[in-house]
Image (cartoon, rainbow over all chains, first blue to last red; front, top):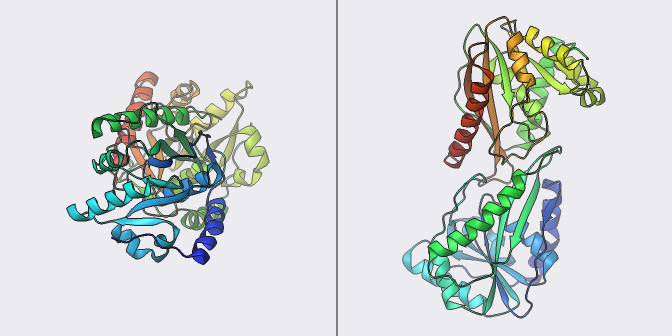
Length: 207
Length: 207
């Protein structure tokens, strides 16, 4: 497992570089504001359709809160991108032992209210057009271990071109009323509800 | 109504130049296997969600369907970009009585089996995530006026990112039958079935 490392120089560089590449590649990034509890850490669950997801959410949450973003990334990807570990990513190796390590580490991160942990529970890249979101069950383990110490936030991102040459990204955020779930099916269903609502708003865009 | 003043050599240059632009802006343009009927002109109905749609129509016509492109554009849009008039753009003004003329003009073009006419049946920009395609009544009139053999093709373009920083476009092409043999209601129904099929196929697309 690869843990995040601190390097102020590299981190400082990417803090400026990420908004720049987002502005270069996207016409605009739209998102709705949510009320973030400063006394709790944040567990952010999002759909995974591209390489941009984590960068977009970093961009959005840098504007919403000062919390430090950590993201769970597959070990192979992490090895290819040397700088990920300096911007808060930690790796997950998809072996039984590797998964448990990564989940424990994520739960530990949630103990510090200054942290924001981003997880893509789909566990792989899916199309932006999926109807049903399927979660892997590991995320439940994090939620059980860190119960009560974090605020759960759902994010669903969609990309749309419309009249512009460059695409724009719409990120829909919401805080579920109830954040204790009996099993992974209940959590998936709750996220699916948010995803469907977000998609409905997205499909209503007519110019 | 502004008729097309298509100049073959300019149109060919434009197709080559636009392919270069598309290859720069997109990771890949993936056209799902589709063989057009020989000896038929093509009425290409496309979903309309972005700035690129018309250019994609040109790309499909030139590189895949091997026909001369003509494209129906809103009059105010064409007036702003009269250069496109040389590449096969002709106008339609939905609020004037000249609309019938434009539809008749498009139908006449389709009498020549070498031609392809791109029409956006939705008539306005609508989100890429929409699950329903509303086909405007004008299409019925257009198809009724076609005298020669003409194949109606529905092209559903969907944008997805997956592992890449640049988006990829996936074109799902479907044969909607021969003009004159399918009723308008049947055509609308087919387009919607095909659109849903495309959305379903997109989820399992190779990447």
